Image 1 (tube, rainbow, N blue to C red):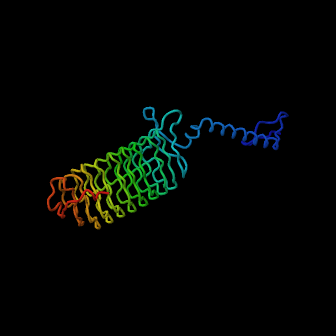
Image 2: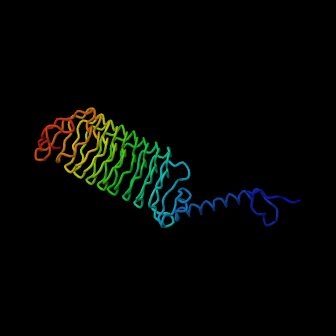
Image 3: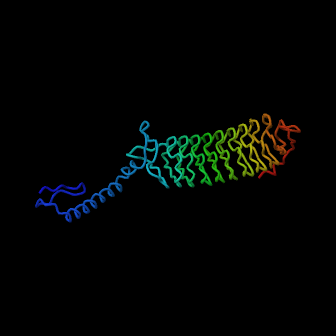
Length: 312
């Protein structure tokens, strides 16, 4: 009588008869052996497991992460896979991964692509590493779980709407390497109360901090030369602002609808006067006596000199 073998069965015994009990023991033993070697492989060759988690492309010898298999809650981006450096996070790589709570970036990552973490509403923590230079457009837009962002000094540019509508964000510290903050970068971050600017910021784009209604005060470093249109428009809780000495250009309605704004202080010479700078805002404009170009009014608001000893 011919006996068939189940796919889970092993080869016949020495006597030629299939012994189910023996086969079961062999299968279990074989499984343990295979499991041991898989564990051993992951221990000594971690990239074996990483390839099963991440999808990526090779760009001139550097890898760009394009996605992740499964539904991770915590992701640690590897510094290298198969001895090739991981240099970036691709566009939309983790978009709408709402279960994701924690991301750790290695020092090898220099770029975060457009919409890379857009819509990751559960994200609460990002360990930036020390290599990120460019943050793409909408990279962290809609990450409502983020409460604090401290960008390392390696960051040079913050893209358009990079942190747009991060409703839970309360504090932002911008590193010393950032030179430009693009349009709407932190717009509609309604809980944002504190912003610390690095010493290298030269431009703030249009509506960059628009509708940040919880922002109370603002101190911008001397490196800043240009503020874009409506940059702080709709910051309805803003009460005072101090602008650095190198500022030469301010866009239209840059401080429009700042309903609580009582004083705005210029540390440098009178900048070019835009249209409707203080639309629906009623501050007094303060300036240092030793600076030049000031008259009795600026952008339709009264001016008066300010004693340097009053500087914070």
